[in-house]
Length: 376
Ligand SMILES: CC(=O)SCCNC(=O)CCNC(=O)[C@H](O)C(C)(C)COP(=O)(O)OP(=O)(O)OC[C@H]1O[C@@H](n2cnc3c(N)ncnc32)[C@H](O)[C@@H]1OP(=O)(O)O
Ligand SMILES: O=C([O-])CC(=O)C(=O)O
Image (cartoon, rainbow, N blue to C red; front, side):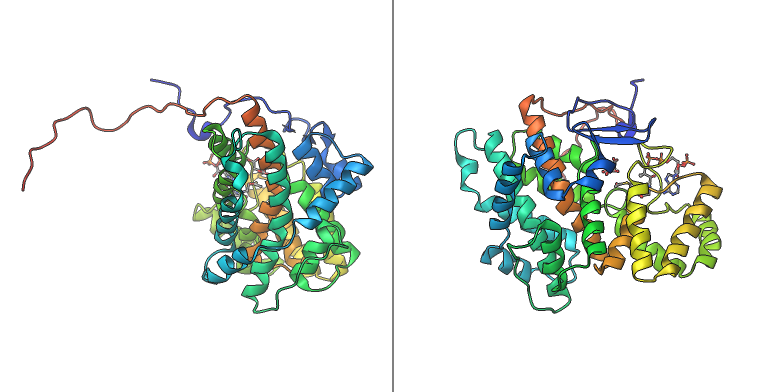
């Protein structure tokens, strides 16, 4: 019997120089830099440059990247029409996925010789998606709320502009800083399911937009990025901190997975949680939402006591986005806006030493048999 690695658990399929997830030391490095330090000292634009270009930008490089990103923010009228045509009942992840797929059809450089694989072209596409995604997400949130669409502002940085387009007001510093940190923490995490999806698609020599479109589909599921919105659904179900233990006992008895807990790689806690929890604590204090903070702690303590399973990044990120004012269904699209930087970096890395990704399977169906004769 062949050794089967269900879910590819424990299988090392390639090398990567983009990030190092170390569950033993509970650490995460982006191209050698600890993510906590990047979150404390950098803007998301700097970290995006690190992922897409390989190094943190110099002052001149940052100024140039900012000019480019700001110039690429406005949505094409065809993208507005496309989003408007989609049912408001569609999940916002489906809207983002469809819009990114459409952006691929606007790019006429894909047909050039080496157009699919050229690194400089792919870096340009990565910047285009990085700049467009906030406009797409903010547009969709506002149309769902029947609010007037707000145009991007080129005098604001990435985080402030994203929040401006979504809420129509310049963000308070606690919100802008917290949002910037969340974008940095979500940006990259080695061979997670969505990134692996992007690499599989890139490995066939398909294009970056197709890889990102597929990755969005993989991120949507609640076992991956969809968990951040599922955490808020859990909180709504529980209601108040005093009900957390009883709720958890019932949920575990029903063999439910508790969203925002557990991780394929980290078994002693997610390296990013303390940084994101500090953001949540600041927001809880700022908005005087202690009830939410107490519910968070009560469920975490009950889960540790019952199962010894610890929170992942989605657990503090969900309530933090809620306090910032985002609708719950927009949380995973926010993850997309961040992770597009990591996905793009992996697509480029895959293409640099490509091997078609095509594992084997062991057949478990019926033995060879005869096709019955036609019956007509
Ligand atoms: C940004 C991110 O994508 S982080 C992940 C976000 N996803 C979630 O929060 C969804 C909830 N968590 C989970 O479903 C899982 O922990 C996963 C999918 C993230 C990791 O799964 P795996 O590595 O495959 O762990 P696996 O599912 O084998 O879990 C091992 C054991 O812990 C249990 N377990 C793991 N996570 C949870 C959970 N959240 N709730 C309840 N039980 C859990 C499993 O039921 C299993 O128990 P068993 O051995 O009695 O069957
Ligand atoms: O690494 C994983 O499997 C999931 C995760 O935390 C991420 O993608 O950020």
